[in-house]
Length: 209
Image (cartoon, rainbow, N blue to C red; front, side, top):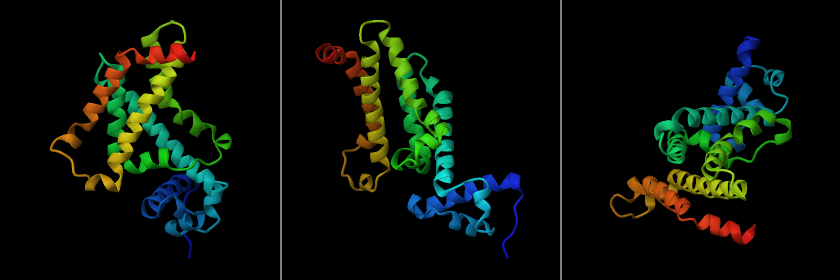
């Protein structure tokens, strides 16, 4: 016989059960019926808070992005003299500590975003922080916004690439020289900094502006 859960607890119970289903079966295995079965409640109970599976998935993803944004805000100041390095290290640390959440955020097709504005708000936070740091560096010079956004895309692509590779199955099969894996993050941050300081992005902007 299905049990009842206090309505105030039901929403949180559904979110937690859904996360457990995703951890075991992947996003493809998530269904409202499976969530209800895991909680031993009626199949209709989860619909009291989530009109559909996509609404439940959107809530989980929103919380992941919110947690990610909070983590970046709290940990990006580890290098007060170098805000970009601090943010880069915070980004990589989060991806390593919370691989499931990271995959949900960046490896899962989004539910219809127009119906979930809070998801969008938290999702763009990391890029906005990165763009703002670069804008402050470039000041009010011509095409500063375009340059900052192109550099932000470059940095984010590098961070995401390494974070994703580090979580992939193939990583354990790479035959690397001693110290390569341990120093890959620091080397990437060094190369990003070198690229930004080279002035090449300004040169590129001058040709395409």
